[in-house]
Length: 257
Ligand code: NAD
Image 1: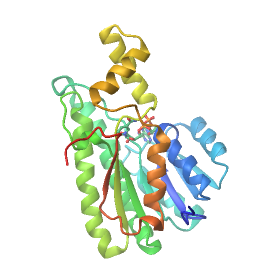
Image 2 (image 1 turned 45 degrees about the vertical axis):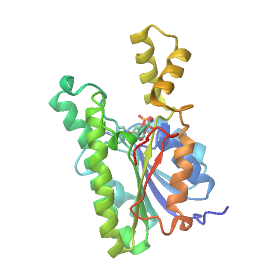
Image 3 (image 1 turned 60 degrees about the vertical axis):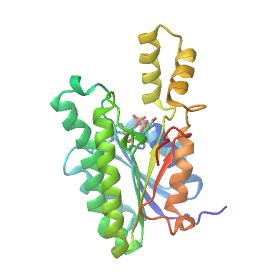
Image 4 (image 1 turned 90 degrees about the vertical axis):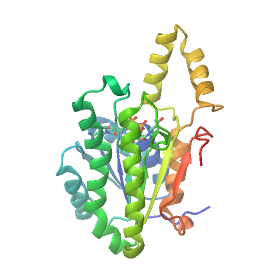
Protein backbone atom coordinates (compact mmCIF):
# COMPACT_ATOMS: atom_id res chain seq x y z
CA UNK A 1 0.00 0.00 0.00
CA UNK A 2 1.45 3.37 -1.01
CA UNK A 3 1.05 5.65 2.00
CA UNK A 4 1.58 8.76 -0.16
CA UNK A 5 4.32 10.03 2.12
CA UNK A 6 6.99 10.57 -0.55
CA UNK A 7 8.93 13.84 -0.02
CA UNK A 8 6.94 14.75 3.09
CA UNK A 9 9.05 16.34 5.83
CA UNK A 10 8.84 14.62 9.22
CA UNK A 11 10.55 15.64 12.47
CA UNK A 12 11.23 12.70 14.80
CA UNK A 13 12.50 13.35 18.31
CA UNK A 14 14.48 10.70 20.18
CA UNK A 15 15.47 9.21 16.84
CA UNK A 16 18.90 7.86 17.74
CA UNK A 17 17.77 4.44 18.96
CA UNK A 18 14.86 2.24 19.96
CA UNK A 19 11.37 3.20 18.80
CA UNK A 20 12.52 6.55 17.36
CA UNK A 21 15.11 4.87 15.18
CA UNK A 22 12.54 2.38 13.88
CA UNK A 23 10.18 5.27 13.09
CA UNK A 24 12.92 7.03 11.12
CA UNK A 25 13.85 3.90 9.19
CA UNK A 26 10.24 2.99 8.43
CA UNK A 27 9.41 6.50 7.20
CA UNK A 28 12.58 6.49 5.10
CA UNK A 29 11.30 3.45 3.19
CA UNK A 30 8.27 5.59 2.28
CA UNK A 31 10.56 8.28 0.80
CA UNK A 32 10.08 10.77 3.64
CA UNK A 33 12.64 13.55 4.23
CA UNK A 34 13.66 13.42 7.87
CA UNK A 35 14.75 15.70 10.69
CA UNK A 36 16.17 13.48 13.41
CA UNK A 37 16.75 14.86 16.89
CA UNK A 38 18.46 13.28 19.90
CA UNK A 39 21.40 13.81 22.20
CA UNK A 40 24.12 11.73 20.59
CA UNK A 41 25.64 12.71 17.24
CA UNK A 42 27.32 9.37 16.55
CA UNK A 43 24.11 7.36 16.86
CA UNK A 44 22.14 9.92 14.85
CA UNK A 45 24.71 9.75 12.05
CA UNK A 46 24.39 5.97 12.04
CA UNK A 47 20.58 6.22 11.79
CA UNK A 48 20.78 8.82 9.01
CA UNK A 49 23.10 6.51 7.09
CA UNK A 50 20.76 3.56 7.55
CA UNK A 51 17.81 5.69 6.38
CA UNK A 52 19.58 6.69 3.16
CA UNK A 53 17.00 9.42 2.50
CA UNK A 54 17.50 13.21 2.71
CA UNK A 55 18.09 13.75 6.42
CA UNK A 56 18.99 16.55 8.79
CA UNK A 57 20.35 15.51 12.17
CA UNK A 58 20.02 17.75 15.21
CA UNK A 59 21.99 17.09 18.38
CA UNK A 60 19.97 18.65 21.14
CA UNK A 61 18.79 18.30 24.70
CA UNK A 62 15.04 18.78 24.47
CA UNK A 63 14.76 19.46 28.19
CA UNK A 64 16.23 22.89 27.50
CA UNK A 65 13.35 25.37 27.12
CA UNK A 66 14.64 26.93 23.87
CA UNK A 67 15.71 23.64 22.21
CA UNK A 68 12.34 22.76 20.58
CA UNK A 69 12.03 26.18 18.93
CA UNK A 70 15.58 25.86 17.53
CA UNK A 71 14.85 22.34 16.27
CA UNK A 72 11.73 23.43 14.41
CA UNK A 73 13.31 26.63 13.02
CA UNK A 74 16.26 24.58 11.73
CA UNK A 75 13.93 22.07 10.06
CA UNK A 76 11.99 24.82 8.27
CA UNK A 77 15.21 26.54 7.24
CA UNK A 78 16.45 23.31 5.67
CA UNK A 79 13.27 21.95 4.09
CA UNK A 80 10.91 24.95 3.94
CA UNK A 81 8.04 23.03 5.55
CA UNK A 82 7.06 20.42 8.13
CA UNK A 83 4.34 17.87 7.43
CA UNK A 84 4.47 15.75 10.56
CA UNK A 85 5.97 16.06 14.02
CA UNK A 86 6.58 12.81 15.92
CA UNK A 87 7.14 13.45 19.62
CA UNK A 88 8.94 10.31 20.71
CA UNK A 89 11.81 11.43 23.00
CA UNK A 90 11.19 10.37 26.56
CA UNK A 91 13.12 9.03 29.48
CA UNK A 92 11.33 8.95 32.80
CA UNK A 93 12.93 7.26 35.77
CA UNK A 94 11.08 4.16 36.91
CA UNK A 95 10.72 3.60 40.62
CA UNK A 96 8.42 3.69 43.55
CA UNK A 97 6.60 6.91 44.38
CA UNK A 98 8.15 7.03 47.85
CA UNK A 99 11.70 6.75 46.51
CA UNK A 100 11.68 9.24 43.65
CA UNK A 101 13.32 12.62 44.17
CA UNK A 102 12.06 16.09 43.29
CA UNK A 103 14.81 16.35 40.63
CA UNK A 104 13.69 13.08 39.00
CA UNK A 105 10.10 14.33 38.77
CA UNK A 106 11.28 17.62 37.25
CA UNK A 107 13.48 15.78 34.78
CA UNK A 108 10.71 13.41 33.66
CA UNK A 109 8.30 16.24 32.91
CA UNK A 110 11.05 18.45 31.41
CA UNK A 111 11.70 16.09 28.50
CA UNK A 112 8.65 14.04 27.75
CA UNK A 113 5.93 16.53 28.60
CA UNK A 114 7.43 20.00 28.23
CA UNK A 115 9.73 18.99 25.36
CA UNK A 116 6.78 17.60 23.39
CA UNK A 117 4.48 20.50 24.27
CA UNK A 118 7.11 23.04 23.17
CA UNK A 119 7.79 21.14 19.91
CA UNK A 120 4.04 21.24 19.19
CA UNK A 121 3.85 24.95 19.98
CA UNK A 122 6.85 25.77 17.79
CA UNK A 123 5.70 23.58 14.89
CA UNK A 124 2.01 24.56 14.99
CA UNK A 125 2.15 27.45 12.51
CA UNK A 126 4.10 25.32 10.00
CA UNK A 127 1.76 22.34 10.40
CA UNK A 128 -1.18 24.69 9.92
CA UNK A 129 0.15 25.80 6.55
CA UNK A 130 0.94 22.23 5.43
CA UNK A 131 -2.34 20.78 6.85
CA UNK A 132 0.00 18.46 8.68
CA UNK A 133 -0.14 16.16 11.66
CA UNK A 134 1.33 15.33 15.04
CA UNK A 135 1.91 11.84 16.43
CA UNK A 136 2.72 11.58 20.13
CA UNK A 137 4.42 8.40 21.33
CA UNK A 138 3.19 8.11 24.90
CA UNK A 139 2.74 4.79 26.74
CA UNK A 140 0.15 2.50 28.32
CA UNK A 141 1.31 3.64 31.77
CA UNK A 142 -0.69 6.80 31.11
CA UNK A 143 -3.90 4.76 31.25
CA UNK A 144 -3.07 2.34 34.06
CA UNK A 145 -1.34 3.68 37.15
CA UNK A 146 1.26 1.68 39.03
CA UNK A 147 3.31 2.50 42.12
CA UNK A 148 6.52 1.51 40.33
CA UNK A 149 5.92 3.86 37.41
CA UNK A 150 4.88 7.00 39.22
CA UNK A 151 6.64 9.60 37.07
CA UNK A 152 6.19 7.89 33.70
CA UNK A 153 2.50 7.25 34.34
CA UNK A 154 1.84 10.84 35.38
CA UNK A 155 3.80 12.31 32.46
CA UNK A 156 2.01 10.00 30.04
CA UNK A 157 -1.43 10.92 31.37
CA UNK A 158 -0.62 14.59 30.96
CA UNK A 159 0.50 14.01 27.39
CA UNK A 160 -2.62 11.99 26.60
CA UNK A 161 -4.73 14.91 27.72
CA UNK A 162 -2.60 17.34 25.73
CA UNK A 163 -3.21 15.17 22.66
CA UNK A 164 -6.95 15.74 23.06
CA UNK A 165 -6.41 19.46 23.72
CA UNK A 166 -4.35 19.80 20.54
CA UNK A 167 -6.81 17.72 18.54
CA UNK A 168 -9.53 20.17 19.56
CA UNK A 169 -7.37 23.08 18.40
CA UNK A 170 -6.31 21.07 15.35
CA UNK A 171 -9.92 20.76 14.19
CA UNK A 172 -9.91 24.54 13.70
CA UNK A 173 -6.42 24.68 12.22
CA UNK A 174 -6.46 21.63 9.93
CA UNK A 175 -3.86 19.69 11.89
CA UNK A 176 -4.52 16.05 12.79
CA UNK A 177 -3.22 15.09 16.24
CA UNK A 178 -3.03 11.48 17.38
CA UNK A 179 -1.18 9.36 19.92
CA UNK A 180 0.19 5.86 20.23
CA UNK A 181 0.56 4.09 23.54
CA UNK A 182 3.29 1.48 23.21
CA UNK A 183 3.17 -1.44 25.63
CA UNK A 184 6.42 -3.24 26.44
CA UNK A 185 8.63 -2.85 23.39
CA UNK A 186 12.00 -4.59 23.09
CA UNK A 187 14.38 -1.62 23.25
CA UNK A 188 17.41 -0.95 25.50
CA UNK A 189 15.06 0.42 28.12
CA UNK A 190 13.16 -2.89 28.31
CA UNK A 191 16.39 -4.92 28.36
CA UNK A 192 17.46 -2.98 31.47
CA UNK A 193 14.11 -3.75 33.10
CA UNK A 194 14.46 -7.45 32.28
CA UNK A 195 17.98 -7.49 33.75
CA UNK A 196 16.77 -5.89 36.98
CA UNK A 197 13.80 -8.31 37.12
CA UNK A 198 16.22 -11.24 36.65
CA UNK A 199 18.62 -10.16 39.37
CA UNK A 200 15.83 -9.39 41.87
CA UNK A 201 14.43 -12.91 41.44
CA UNK A 202 17.60 -14.92 40.74
CA UNK A 203 16.44 -15.84 37.20
CA UNK A 204 18.39 -16.01 33.95
CA UNK A 205 17.53 -13.44 31.27
CA UNK A 206 15.29 -15.74 29.21
CA UNK A 207 13.35 -16.92 32.25
CA UNK A 208 13.00 -13.33 33.42
CA UNK A 209 11.71 -12.14 30.04
CA UNK A 210 9.17 -14.97 29.93
CA UNK A 211 8.02 -14.34 33.46
CA UNK A 212 7.75 -10.57 32.90
CA UNK A 213 5.66 -11.08 29.76
CA UNK A 214 3.41 -13.49 31.66
CA UNK A 215 2.98 -10.99 34.48
CA UNK A 216 1.97 -8.31 31.97
CA UNK A 217 -0.45 -10.74 30.33
CA UNK A 218 1.13 -10.57 26.87
CA UNK A 219 2.28 -13.42 24.64
CA UNK A 220 5.54 -11.57 23.78
CA UNK A 221 7.16 -8.17 23.84
CA UNK A 222 6.65 -5.83 20.90
CA UNK A 223 9.27 -4.81 18.35
CA UNK A 224 10.03 -1.11 17.66
CA UNK A 225 8.95 -1.51 14.04
CA UNK A 226 5.47 -2.52 15.23
CA UNK A 227 5.11 1.00 16.66
CA UNK A 228 6.78 2.59 13.63
CA UNK A 229 4.28 1.10 11.17
CA UNK A 230 1.40 2.68 13.08
CA UNK A 231 3.21 6.03 13.03
CA UNK A 232 3.57 5.80 9.24
CA UNK A 233 -0.14 5.06 8.94
CA UNK A 234 -1.17 7.93 11.23
CA UNK A 235 1.09 10.37 9.36
CA UNK A 236 -0.43 9.36 6.03
CA UNK A 237 -3.64 10.35 4.22
CA UNK A 238 -4.81 6.75 4.80
CA UNK A 239 -5.55 7.92 8.37
CA UNK A 240 -7.41 11.05 7.25
CA UNK A 241 -10.28 10.61 9.74
CA UNK A 242 -8.05 9.60 12.68
CA UNK A 243 -7.98 12.71 14.83
CA UNK A 244 -7.62 12.79 18.61
CA UNK A 245 -7.21 9.02 18.39
CA UNK A 246 -5.24 7.24 21.08
CA UNK A 247 -4.10 3.84 19.88
CA UNK A 248 -2.76 1.22 22.30
CA UNK A 249 -0.14 -0.88 20.52
CA UNK A 250 0.56 -3.18 23.42
CA UNK A 251 -0.10 -6.80 22.48
CA UNK A 252 -3.31 -6.73 24.52
CA UNK A 253 -1.68 -5.58 27.77
CA UNK A 254 -4.32 -2.92 28.49
CA UNK A 255 -7.61 -4.54 29.32
CA UNK A 256 -9.56 -1.51 30.44
CA UNK A 257 -11.61 0.49 27.90
P1 NAD B 1 15.12 4.84 24.26
O1 NAD B 1 15.64 5.16 25.61
O2 NAD B 1 15.63 3.63 23.56
O3 NAD B 1 15.35 6.10 23.30
C1 NAD B 1 15.02 7.37 23.75
C2 NAD B 1 15.42 8.38 22.71
O4 NAD B 1 15.21 9.69 23.27
C3 NAD B 1 16.89 8.31 22.32
O5 NAD B 1 17.03 8.65 20.97
C4 NAD B 1 17.52 9.41 23.18
O6 NAD B 1 18.69 9.99 22.62
C5 NAD B 1 16.42 10.43 23.19
N1 NAD B 1 16.56 11.34 24.33
C6 NAD B 1 16.68 10.98 25.63
N2 NAD B 1 16.83 12.09 26.37
C7 NAD B 1 16.79 13.14 25.51
C8 NAD B 1 16.90 14.55 25.67
N3 NAD B 1 17.07 15.10 26.87
N4 NAD B 1 16.83 15.33 24.56
C9 NAD B 1 16.65 14.78 23.34
N5 NAD B 1 16.53 13.46 23.13
C10 NAD B 1 16.61 12.65 24.21
O7 NAD B 1 13.54 4.82 24.40
P2 NAD B 1 12.43 3.90 23.68
O8 NAD B 1 12.25 2.70 24.49
O9 NAD B 1 12.72 3.80 22.24
O10 NAD B 1 11.14 4.81 23.93
C11 NAD B 1 10.75 5.83 23.04
C12 NAD B 1 9.48 6.48 23.57
O11 NAD B 1 8.46 5.49 23.73
C13 NAD B 1 9.67 7.14 24.94
O12 NAD B 1 8.91 8.31 24.99
C14 NAD B 1 9.11 6.09 25.88
O13 NAD B 1 8.63 6.65 27.07
C15 NAD B 1 7.98 5.52 25.05
N6 NAD B 1 7.61 4.16 25.48
C16 NAD B 1 8.48 3.14 25.34
C17 NAD B 1 8.10 1.87 25.77
C18 NAD B 1 9.02 0.68 25.63
O14 NAD B 1 8.65 -0.40 26.08
N7 NAD B 1 10.19 0.81 25.04
C19 NAD B 1 6.84 1.66 26.35
C20 NAD B 1 5.98 2.74 26.47
C21 NAD B 1 6.36 3.99 26.03
